[in-house]
Amino acid sequence: MSTEEPQLENGAKPEPEHNPESNPVREPAPISEPEPNLASQPPSDSTPVAITDADPKAEEPKDASIQSNEADISQSNDQNARPELRKDDGSRTFTMRELLSELKTEEGDDASTPRSQQSTLHPQADQNSAAMELINSVTGADEEGRSRQKILTFAAKRYASAIERNPEDYDALYNWALVLQESADNVNPDSTSPSKDALLEEACKKYDEATRLCPTLHDAFYNWAIAISDRAKMRGRTKEAEELWKQATKNYEKAVQLNWNSPQALNNWGLALQELSAIVPAREKQKIVRTAISKFRAAIQLQFDFHRAIYNLGTVLYGLAEDTLRTGGATNPKDVSPNELYSQSAIYIAAAHALKPNYSVYSSALRLVRSMLPLPYLKVGYLTAPPAGESIAPHSDWKRSQFVLNHEGFQQVNQLEQKQTQNLSGRPHITNSENRAIKVDIPDIVSVSACADLTLPPGAGLCIDTIHGPFYFVADSWESLEGWLDAIRLVYTIYARGKSEVLASIVTG
Image (cartoon, rainbow, N blue to C red; front, side, top):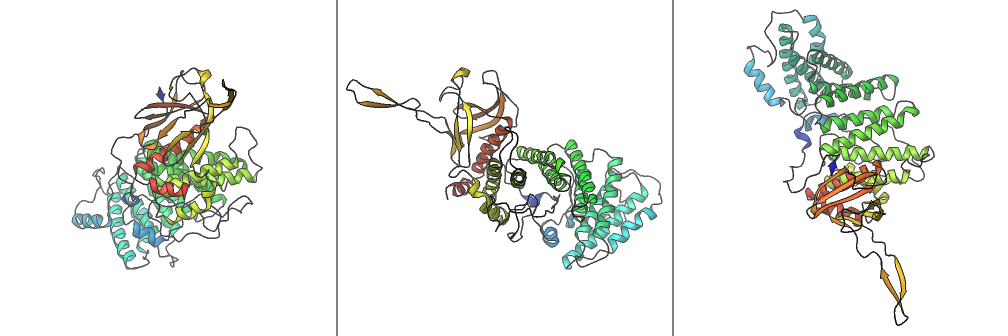
């Protein structure tokens, strides 16, 4: 059987749990206005909001409807959690201590960066002065912030000097943009000068120039998109913000094209699309939302335990359910109903909570959506399957039946067709025409994937390979197949991370 989806492998040693603080590149924290509560919506006494790379320390949100964006985390918490210069995976990343040590060591030496080339001095004072003035006027909110800013100012002087010697030094331009972006985060909230937006705008100019000189610098496109997103958030839901969000999505797209193996970039891309969908005309919204869903799903397929993308997918599905309900429900029979969207949303939020049960935003979101799960199961739905024990059977023998998934396994609901027959004594005798059901225990799973083969009936094929052999099914639609793939993979990932008890408490507690 040929597979079309990335597989979830069993038997290998589980990867260590992702540490958000190990990646200094920050995801944007988009803003979101609460949507009005609908009659069918549970009371929003606790509201899920999406989170950043750093462990959230925000209070559980109150008096707001479900949001499909990141939690609002204070600047100070954001800075304390990430004392590094931002760079995406695969590039050199400096902590502030390392940067200070290196700068002191190299002070007085040639300050050119690894890929910069020697050239005659070129006057850049006019171009650099505005950026240096902005950086010099930044004051941190506390002693730590002031110390941090001294290092950033020192670094800015180094990169300015390198660019004066070689205007085509894209490394220096990129690193200077990082310094400007970090300085924007270090602006005292009570300060009116310099403008945080001015620092971010200057950083964007440096990223623009760096990527012009080196079009394959994916880190620059990624962090440039973050800077644009931060500028967009300052402008609310305005036309100017719409244009900035469009620019941010284009830069995330470019970053992913250059470095496809980046779940963080895909997740941020999805968040930017969500923000854009809240501003564009209604006729454009659903297409953008569905594109955002595809980005979150792609991020999860790259990293099955990426709880932030899992959670964000849950919140965007919740928002789509509300929009669908508000506009009168699914008009096309092939469209997913609002109730099904709510149920899908609850699956992802429950999975995110199981992976990170100590996150208060996940806990509060789960309280809101838990009743939308088909308890005591995580997922219930229909699949077409061959008779139990027969992985290959004539298409006429395949039957559509109900399946359930919980923390322990995936199982066919055994429909007992009772037939009364007369025995020789004339007394009624009850027999079961179906006395076996397909059952897959979660620990037995080797891989879960989409599949296509002529031995299967036409449709969206699903293969669950186990230590006992493969099981094949056909979903009602490709969209339904994606839901089953995600749900089974998430349950396995939760098991592999040793969190099955948490999921059990969700569905049975």
